[in-house]
Image 1 (cartoon, one colour):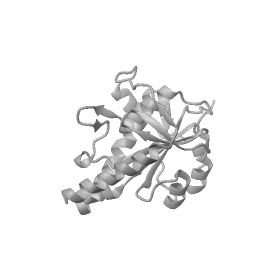
Image 2: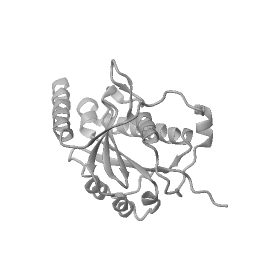
Image 3: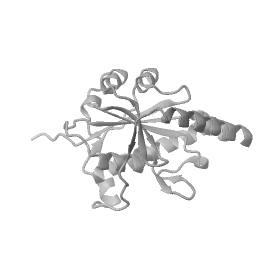
Image 4: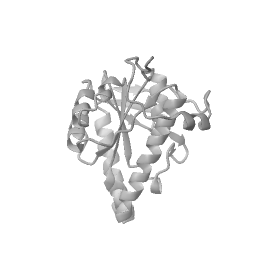
Length: 219
């Protein structure tokens, strides 16, 4: 089993490295490890919001959100912001904005462009018409390679993967609150349509869609 796992990870890394070499890369600003809002206040204020202003997020805000979800917090061991069974980290974050689709690369804290086309309308169709997805200036999609966990944990891997998705999602949502933003986790969508819109490799599946932005308040 260890040999099988190592081979799978090696193939994944090699294929990913080849694909990344052909993409536009954006280096993200270094994330902060302290802020103006306590974790307790973020928890108390977190709410699911479905109405967003068109105001764009800064690159610093995007950087902080992605770091909270999958950023490396220990460079010696490669540990990330959210716990992962066996420290395998089978999840990948994608962002969708008006400028296209980008894959988050934890190693080096950067974004790699997948497409220059705004695919948020495609996610609206895939999620049964939840229009606020296209209104949010930033949409984070959590995807994962189930086979990485399965190779080591077998039948329990499905449970572990779901746990990890929850860890990552809550980190992102709480970070959003601390930045004066809000999000809405969405699990109702057609997987194949989302996968096609994001141009996902066959080894990855979409698990969660999270539109994020400044909340549009009503008077």
